[in-house]
Length: 429
Image 1 (tube, rainbow, N blue to C red):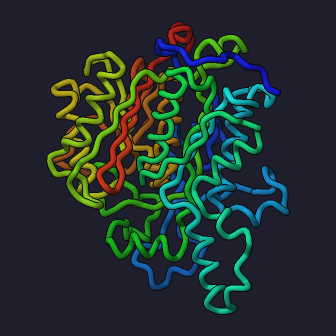
Image 2 (image 1 turned 90 degrees about the horizontal axis):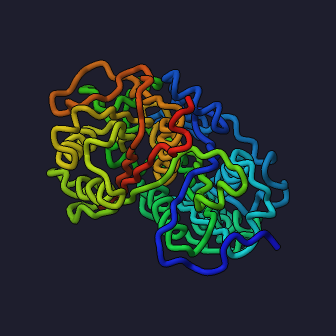
Image 3 (image 1 turned 120 degrees about the vertical axis):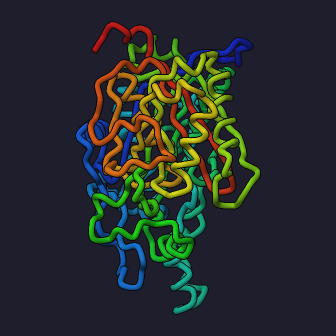
């Protein structure tokens, strides 16, 4: 039985901090590899290698390259897990290692797991359906369902760490892991758990997944220059680049973290969410839904717009998103918008869909801790409709005391998280 830090919910909000980050991304494995690549403005995008793309209009993606599932999962267990679950378990292990937390402290009802995915096990669904058509129903694996449904990602993580607290899976398209983290923040704040393993995972680079986005004409067709294809806010952007991977954060109640001497990346102080009520896939043209999300997050944090130093934007590199997000930022922050550094991590990683918000919240936490604004790479041609400071092409050392991370999804679902530099880190580099 793990150590219990608290036995009953509390009526007063508790402070919540990020103490561990686990990343499986197109930029590599773990915090150090990802942060180094992001600081240096490295692209993880290249030609798709997972299937033949001759008939596809977009032939590029942000593939995970260095992940060996056997580093995290027993071979006999792999058939029970689509790659999105494998990525989630790998990222969870990396996050726990990064947090330097004894696994025994995660056991019991005071630790929750809140991990989602936008699509889930689409690759395994495709493969199993082909097997059904070719060989009949008796050849369908008994592990088919448990290997593909989204809540098996937090289920497998909770089994591994014997975490018996709140357990759930968000499914809100590209806002998924931002909502997971925001909801986890509130769970801890309310006193329903002391630790939550939270984030998202996605493995959408499959024939059907990419074909679906191609059919929507949502993807970049800059196939001859993969590294330059994701170019958020640039006037010549032509669509997003699909990515894959997982991002898991360890969220802890502050006193729990201090009690065990944990390093603290940042404190979560605000969470806003909203709906566009506009369209199944396109953002509202007036930017109002996204603006509401940002305003609610500011209100939740109890701060004014001028206090935000940096925004990790949703920044997908699509013509509509980037100009509408720019408009929404200006609506939410007024004239202060022009004094905020705004970057898009997707310029380097591509769009990890349901895992994007987790990855980008992790990057925001690293920015706060290290006092560096990451760049938006491939920014070469200014767009008059995108007229903010996008930290073009090179990382920027700068004070980052408060930072926001935006995530927006199909169906008009929006999330904004606000992170604060932890005060005990204020005098440390």
